[in-house]
Image (cartoon, rainbow, N blue to C red; front, side, top):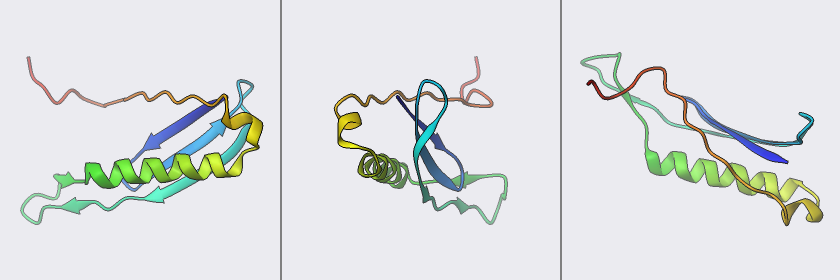
Length: 88
């Protein structure tokens, strides 16, 4: 089983999925985004809020599954960025 987590601009979403792609449980938590009045292209999010939302989603998944699965659940995180924040 796998826990898939997606951190987007509006929410954190998580799902418990089997190796065959069957979704056993899902959870979502909203995120707040702050924008700059001077430049609407810029925005900020709270890393603490993201972390807490992620933890709440995973906790909700664990509460939804059968006891036997809880002993064997593992978590892997991957990051995808459209562009690199660093210039070389």
